[in-house]
Every structure is written in structure tokens, then in C-alpha cells.
Image (cartoon, rainbow, N blue to C red; front, side, top):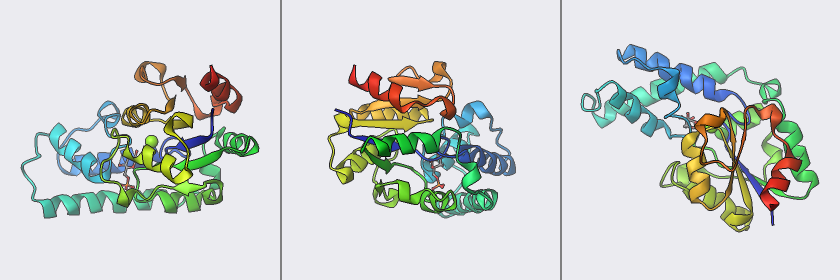
Length: 219
Ligand code: BG6
Ligand code: MG
């Protein structure tokens, strides 16, 4: 039986995935590493330091920096990112999300956030959405990032529901993988071709339908 929804944040609730991309792209260019939207797909859902490692690998420069320098690079990216998102307001909530959250609550189901971002609380506050979530998983306490299922399993544990009663909503390939490894039902947002592993794919957040997800989950 369906009991809870667990949401990713960046790229699902709001379009901050674009700002992460722009900030990484600027950093990559500073380092003379070419970084495309296609490569960016591999970064979605991945933690800050893991993302930096991937970018350095794309450029064949993973050996060139000390741990201290890597921390500085990641901090630089984050400062740029924070600057880019500093003007977000509730008008930046993606279409269809507020209705979906309302429909879930109306059906008396639980809602949690499973975001890899250390900025998640700040973003939810800026969107004025914090009250809509029963739990927000503290990513600083998670040992393994997506595609590991840990963050989704932690959310289910906090909600006190079995993973098999949960729907996870993601825009990242690593995120969908994490949801499936957690034994949950995976709803992906994005192009159908990218999400063979998802149980249900919507091209846009606007198309998300609580009724349809519930029906398909129960099939
Ligand atoms: C994820 C994003 O939600 O959070 C990634 O999809 C991002 O792109 C990651 O790198 C970590 O975010 P932050 O804000 O902690 O750097
Ligand atoms: Mg995402």
C-alpha cells in the first residue's frame, strides 16, 4: 500500500539543477576543462565533492590537486551557486509541484525530502515549502551518496514506513538508481530515453499526476 512520497529537490521541486550546472561549468572553464550538458547528466544527484572529482576526471586532471585545493575549488563553486540562487522565491517552484504536494497530503500520505544538497534547507525556505515536508534527511549524516540507496532508506526510516510503500521522485539517473536499490517505486522527471530503470516517467513536472502515480503503484 502506498504510504509516502520521497522527493529529490534540485530539478524536481525547483530548477536549481540549472544553477548547479552553470556554477560547475564556470569552474570547469577556469580549470580549462570542457564541460557540456551531456556530461552534466552524470553529475545530477551527486554530492559536491563527488561532482568535483568527476569534473576533474573529465579533464584528466584528477591528480593535479591536493585535498586542500579540491576543498577550495568546491567552496568556490558553492559560493557561485549560492550567489545564483539568492533570488529564488516561491515563484520558482516548478509547475505541478504544489498541486502534487497538496494531493499527497489530502490523501493523508507522508512526504520527505532526500536531497544530496547541503543547501537544501535554505532552498526549501526560500521556496516557502519547508512546512510541506514531514522529514528532511540531513545529508551531512549520510555516508554514501546517490546512487547508493542510503538517503532514501533513511527517509523511509524517519517516516516509519516500509520502503516498498514509498514512491521516490527524481530527475537524476543516479537518483532513480538509488530509489530502485532502496526497493521503492521510481518516478522520474525528464526524457523517457534517459530513465529505462524508472517505473514511471514524466517529461515535465507539470505532467506529474498523483492519481496516475497511485493507480500505477497499486497495479
Ligand atoms: C544535488 C544536485 O541535489 O545536490 C547536485 O543534483 C549537487 O547537482 C548536489 O551537486 C550537492 O549540492 P550542494 O548544494 O551540497 O553542493
Ligand atoms: Mg535532482
